[in-house]
Amino acid sequence: MNATETSLYPLRLTVTAKPLVFGGHAIARRLGKTGLPDWSVAETWECSDVTGHRSMVTNGPLAGRTLHQVLGDRPQALMGAGWSGTSFPLLTKFIDATGTLPVHLHADDETARRLEGEPNGKTEAWHILDAAPGATALCGVKEGVTADRLRAALEAQDFEAVLRRLPVRAGQTLYVPGGTLHSFGPDTLVYEIEQTSDIQQHAMRWKMEDGSPVGDEEFRTNLDMLMLQADLEIRPDFTSGLSVAVGDAVERVFLCAGPYFALERWRAGTAEPMRHSFATAQILSNVGAPVRVRASGWSEVLGRAETLLLPAACGEVEVTGPADVLLGYLPDLDRDVRGPLLAAGYPPPLLRGFIAS
Image (cartoon, rainbow, N blue to C red; front, side, top):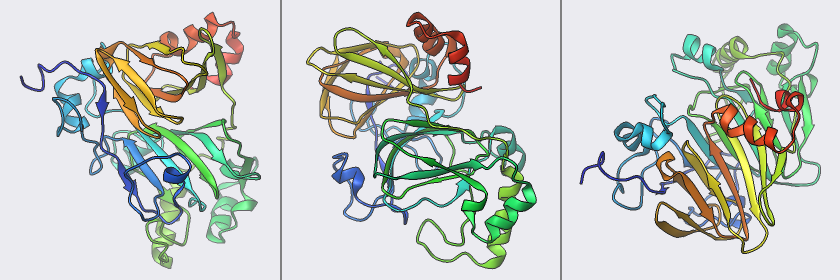
């Protein structure tokens, strides 16, 4: 049986651990993720088709094949009917901001194509899993700040003068469009979903890989490119999401949604299983105690902070409670987001404000 003939099933993927300077040990110690190295870990890339960091299947008949290869072999079985593309469109991560992330941005689609030679930019969203009292994030430029004033403040590393500082609380989510200057931490634990890309422009005089200094010429070049990509009008805010009751003691919360991705958090408070039908690939990440997952005749326990990729061909999943899981996916906004929320009684004007354009 070759790869194109193999029926798709829930895929376990390799994880890339990133030792960036702002990291610590929270992903292992607070989330309970196993298999991580002893050194400080800033990010674990749970599902990735980024060149050079592509996830590989570790279970079943497709073990040893990259996510990219599975997509190439079975694009619609993985992503859903009518889908076409060359890369898996979503990247998900756990991020440990024991320290503070550098102030940076990611290009939007148009800017990425024009200035970076990349097929798409990187809009992202942060779902806050844990945060110390008083934790904050920088996100977006303050109203009235001009490009010249922004450039001068970044040169002086005076971020407070020009960037919005937002309070951070566990359970909230922030949708961050491409072109938005941002940072978060310290003492913040985040689940991030984003477009598949690793492009970024930094405003710091140190490198996030090892903390080494950035020379004057390189710093000026970095700021030149950052200023060409910065959007001074985007000012996103955190949201608590929109909740929908599903059966006895099962809650579905739409955390954020837009054209690039949607993210939901499902909780089941009893042994009553949560059941979910879907028509597009789902990235299922467990942020609670171990749970049993069933789909397409497959049944296994998903441990703490572990991730499964559920191909569209699976069609439905059952997770035995108690459960606390995240589901990220590329949505049909009408079918997957507006429809369920309208059916739950949310008014259209509220949805227009909630769903990103």
